[in-house]
Image (cartoon, rainbow, N blue to C red):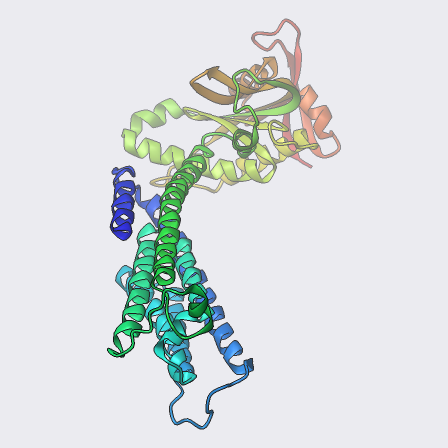
Length: 446
């Protein structure tokens, strides 16, 4: 009855799990965890059988060692061979679900067979094996199945163990019709080969109760595992929308991510725009246009990232990148200039899509900006804002007027080091939105 209640409870718990199918990538990760668990189970089983063997070799022998048949070594050898086979299949990812259940049955059958063989090995009545302390290993074998994150494995192991122990008890009672070996005297039970039915019932109840508890625990743990894997996959996807440093902040913040947590920091802002994008968008259909943009973004992202820049936004055909915010970068101005030079050099030889040649204009400015999360309480985005960001965008646009491809502000030139790059003064102009003039420079590598 207890076994039926345990099975029914586990079925109800299983039905209470979300019925929506898991995405394939989530299911694949969970399967990988289960396969790794099967390998761990195999190694633990191997350790158990080797432990059995060591105890057998070291323990004093009270039986006739010249007997033609000694069952314990045979049982241990059989179990060792099966464990090695199972471990090999687990490493090769060729351990199907049905074989796992067969493995559980064989594991318990071999363990119970080993216990059964004790009375033959030591030439005692069958009731002798019921008092062997090896019965405790049944709980170890049941607990092993908790590593699989599958309650059915635990329940199967517990039921097989309980049924197997009942069979062993029935064998003792019925093997000799003239003497069932049953006693009601607890002291006599402990000091002889007789059996106490209540004691054996207690063992079966203990097996079933432990199995039930572990089964409930596994159902809960599997839910947590599924949730954790889904969260991990979701976080990895979302991390592509924000810089890695911001994603890390969302995982470690004690109070969660809060709106408006901006920080003032000196940074170098790089603004890049594709030349002639309007004409390009007229020539290409939307699908090819998006594919071309993605190829372009991937190409420019590589030097930006390599020089510790962070792409803050893709704005249509433009890229906004920051250096020293949020990723700390002491040499941020020089690294921004290096990245811009590498991008322009790369675009001289690189084609995109169906042999398209793309050119870009770049504006770079250094100053104090605010970087952080903005938006609504339900929808946040990371960005850098401030007048210095606007100046970088204005410098990019000035390339049209001066026929250049990279324009940097005087502050960027000073912070990057005039000795490191061939800066050439273009003009001292009034940048739109500012009330004071700004010195601007074109750039070439020394």
